[in-house]
Image 1 (cartoon, rainbow, N blue to C red):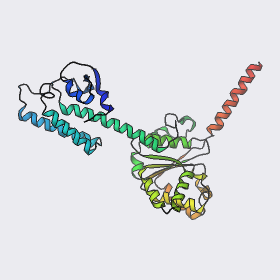
Image 2: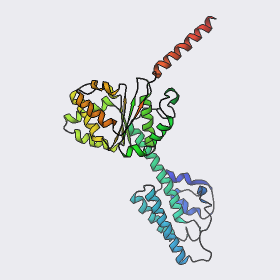
Image 3: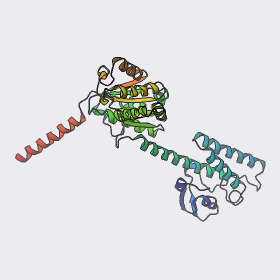
Length: 328
C-alpha cells in the first residue's frame, strides 16, 4: 500500500542494517526509521531460542488488536484499518522482516498510523478553516483583552473549548458599540473551535438572510436550513444591520427556531434587546427571537470606546507631538 507524506516524518539518518528493508517498502528509500521515544528500532522483541511458538502468536494477535484499538480511538476509517491488518499479517509471516530483522511489524504500522491520522486531522482542520470563512488574523492571541476589561480571558478560553455549551446548543451573544471588538472576539472563538475539531461558519447576518430568502423563493428554505446543521456554530455578525422586512426577518426567525437547543449561534449586535424592534417587523416576532436566543445563552457586554477612534486619536496625538518637536 502507498503511504502518505506523513510517513516521511519518520525517516532519519541513513542506515545499512537489514532491518530497514521493512521500512523501505513504505518510503522507497534505504533510510533508517526513528521511532522517537518508543525505543530503539533495532531491539529484537523475540524470545531467545528460534521458534516463537504459541506465546509469540498470542503476542502478535494482541498487537493486531492494539492497532485496531488505536484506529478506533483516533477515528481511523474501516478501509484504512483493513489495509493495516493486511500489512500486519503479511509482515508477520515474512521472515525477512520479522524473524531476521527484529522489527515488530505491528509497532511499525501503529507508528505510521499515528502519523497518518495526525496528518488527516491537520488537513481536516485546514479544510474546515477555509470552509468557516473567518476573517484573517482574528484569533484569541491577537485580541487585546486589556482594552475590554469586562470580558474575562479565562472565561473566553473556557468557551473556546466548546465541550459543554456546544453539546446542548447554547448561544453566545456579544453586545457593544461599533469598534468594540465584537466581530474580532466572535471570529477568534470560531477559529479556536475549528482547531478543536468543530465546524463553524462566520457570516454577516445580512448575507445569510438574503441566502435564506432566495431559498424561500425557490421553495427550498427548509432544505437550506437543514444544510446549515452541519455547522456546530454559526456566527451571525452584526444582526442589527438586517433590514426590517417581513419576509427576510421571518427567514431569520426560522433559522433561530430551527437551531434552538440543537445547534449553537453566536450573535454580535450593537443594540440592546429593547431596540431589536428595528430588526423584526413586530413585537411578537422580536420576543420570539430574543426568547430563543437568550435561553441557554452566555451574554458578554463590551461597552468600550471604539478601537478605531482610539487608533485615530493616537495617530493625531503622535502627529501633533511630531509637529511640536519640529517647530522647537
